Image 1 (tube, one colour):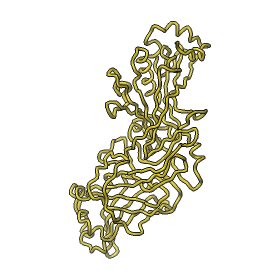
Image 2 (cartoon, rainbow, N blue to C red; image 1 turned 90 degrees about the vertical axis):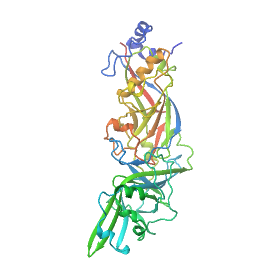
Image 3 (tube, rainbow, N blue to C red; image 1 turned 120 degrees about the vertical axis):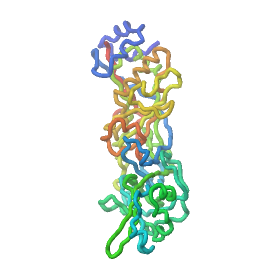
Length: 448
């Protein structure tokens, strides 16, 4: 026997008569369209999914030459952070960077200078900080021993490096200056030990493998802009400085977690970097979805909240934690051969495998929520209701939600299908209660 929940909710609007007239039709009421609403006495229904936890190491590797057009920025991370939010554990990050070859020769002033008159340094621009406030962080730089395939590598990967650092013994990055540029000096012998720096183009890129950068005793994770990273050679002669710069080509962040444990009471924890996210699934044979099979669907949104107020309450005054500027939701298609392809659900739903589709989100909803807007959610639920009515499976079986940071929330909707910038940030998703309430699909139904 079908639930009478929706009937009771809308009895004042005359839905009983509408249902009686529509029980033999498979399409009445489901093709109304998402805007404007039709009929009268619209009702909003919150369909709460079954929610679980998943862990998928995020993509933290990038190659500027292969970066999607909609992905204008990237970063890499170093350091460690023990966030006060319970369940996050100690998170440690190691950064890797490789550089592009120059199109022109290194100036002769540098190449012909004596070894003690030449210097090499890494010039990095900070764009992320997560941890306890500090003025400076000790760093170590190591040569990579072989070419590293950083492109689209996931955070659990790592690449071989020499055992001894090539940075100066007292290398630090100063975080107290208003200028976001930091400089890491390399040992005086480094240029002499690396004659490949005088090569150009592909020769340089084949023979120079890049660096690993660590901050072994820090209490914060610091992020650097991949596009603004530079390896600089320089010499000074008679008061004149000559420089040669190599721009960043590839970057990657290796992330490890120790500890962890239970999340705060009443919440599920999402955590970027280590890849902790949520899974959601809706049962169309249970209330309230089983009552909607013969009802007009006018609007739909999928909403996954992040309780930013609770996060702020758990933040001591000497601790800095930015809010995530985006999320990513991947939906898994049902295994039935008649299930529509990603683009057949909606043209902007993008396939990333035979089974998985990325759903465009409303970027302005971050950091408070991951929001799948009506133009995406409506066809998902409309087609699923039609299919279930005909004895078929819904379009998607599972939705996976992860933090996916963006440069800002002003990005367009298409950008939200891309992997997010590397971070170590947490998000707290309520299990129940009132505002901001748990994850849900908010559906608007209206009698004809």
